[in-house]
Length: 344
Image 1: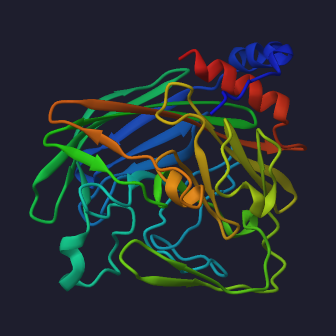
Image 2 (image 1 turned 60 degrees about the vertical axis):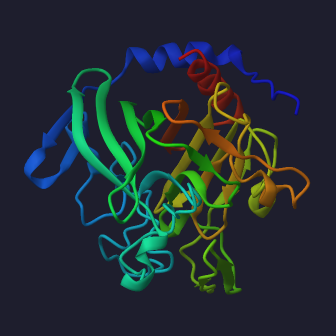
């Protein structure tokens, strides 16, 4: 697989300008509520939620610099017109469909108790660090466990949050260490995912059916509403539904919320496994980077299995960029942001 070149360095001056106008980030933990609020320029950007009532920790919701919510409200909140399919799609999350046979991705309150033993949990047990400043820092420790609380992986994740007048950036670095032999078997649903707001979905009139690794079918309803108006663009020039299953260094979902142009972009890191990643980017609003679903995305032509022996570890790094204003980020700007991220 040839490497994808990242160009557009001619606009590095724009990045320097952005850093010069970086806004203050406040990272505010609330241990009793099992959450950490992230405020930028005094305004709530997102919250890290890790209560045991959720099957995984999440960042929810995500907002633009102007306070527009870019993630779906369901299932933690209710907003008229929001789709209610896939209850495990909450904000921004990180997990996988098949780790040692357990499904961490599709686990939610909707799974019957009789089937819960087929699913995995990610339990955050320690906030390691919080730091405020021009860059806000949040580090936590979590365990990937079975229903019987048998630990398969230890996770240490570091978030770095930053922002300017019309941009928000999340840099995520996650290290997974095997407590026992651990195998990520090639599967469609993973690894870093978010579910966008209704306005950023791609419009469609047709119902869509999707089946998970356990054979559970979910129907995503189509409609003729005038709210959805989003689209995808990858660094390789793929747009719309053609972005799904293709490789690229970055992918952008963009549209309008009200009168504002908004984009949410995910940037892969060159040191990640199987770079550049495959994009599990669905028009209905699931936006995910999954380097470990190669068999599905190549129609069986090749396969990717990641195996860790006890004590071994692997690191994944991603950058999420949320922008708003008169125009969404151009390919050249995203290439420059990707080039800067590649140096971290």
